[in-house]
Image (cartoon, rainbow, N blue to C red; front, top):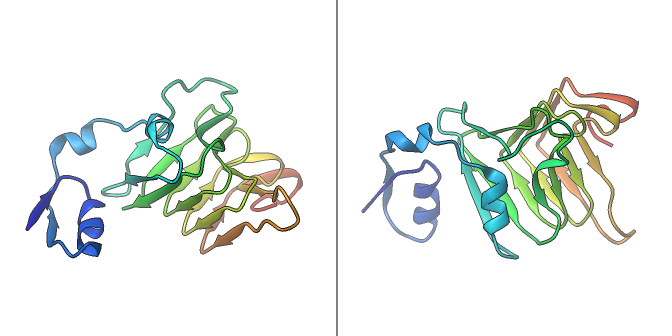
Length: 173
């Protein structure tokens, strides 16, 4: 039986047939994870798991500044970003929350981007996520544009809240 420090670990271990219980660790909530750094270290095909614990954990980019392109960039490789327990990516001053190409985003809240919450340009899957308080000319919450006519982008079970567009698609374009 494994005692786990992070909330997402029991589910992963149990899927592999290993008994596990989440017990937590005080530093797991005290040290903010920099999601952009974790994604940068991931290899093509990897999955990055982020945890929210009580749903209040906020992940931000390591060098947030006005006009920084995106907090998390998944465009140069196929990497999935999977949330457990309600993690929040707060884009604050960044232009956008997540940019992705051929990856997956599941169970993550993206909020407060100066521009769109997520930019999808490939065969992406976006599921069970929340996009809030973003604005741009097209696709305030999410802008999805397949790179070819044969590429699909799947958006399912998502909530779009208080997103604004000056042209079209305040929630999803």
